Structure formats: structure tokens, C-alpha cells
Image (cartoon, rainbow, N blue to C red; front, top):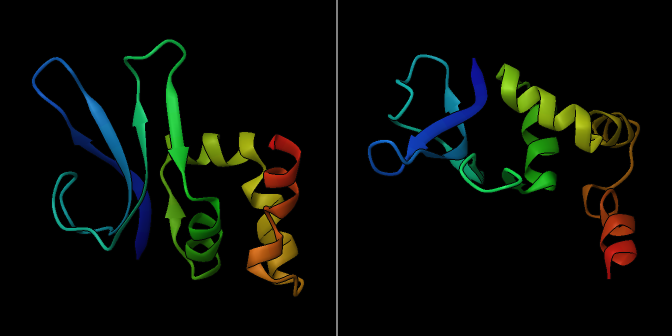
Length: 103
């Protein structure tokens, strides 16, 4: 089973994390398939950046997010985008509205 989870990076007492797609059996900081973003809990507010298109793609392929990643996905509307993708909407058009609104 494939999971979307956090991989710890950074020095001792200065954690930062990468959001990765990895096999469930791989260790936390071990082998991964793809890096889709990063998370820095030391900034104010916390920084979470990830590629939404890749997140929807991996969820459509059956990847299961960890609890922390699931909360971010719910907050950002990734599951609604996944429903639209499964209904036949192209992956490229799912997040174009956000890109034009923020510009």
C-alpha cells in the first residue's frame, strides 16, 4: 500500500518535513517514490506547501494519507477536487480557478 506522509529533515531540534509518497513498509526517513511538498512547523504561521495536482493523482491511484496530511487535504479541498477528477474533469483544470483568483 502506498502512503502520503511526512519525512523528517533538518538538524537536531530544528525539524522540517517533506511530504512524500512512499510504500507503507518503508521507514519514516527511508525510501520514497516522490516528493510532493514540504512542511515547516518552526515558522509563524506554519508553512505547508505541496503540489495539489500530484496529491489528487496519488489519491486517485489509491494512496492513503497519514492523519496530519489528511487534515491539510481536507482543509484545502483536495477531496472535492478528487471527486471532480473521478467524475471526468481533467487534472489540469481542477486548480486553474485558484491560480487565476490568487493572481
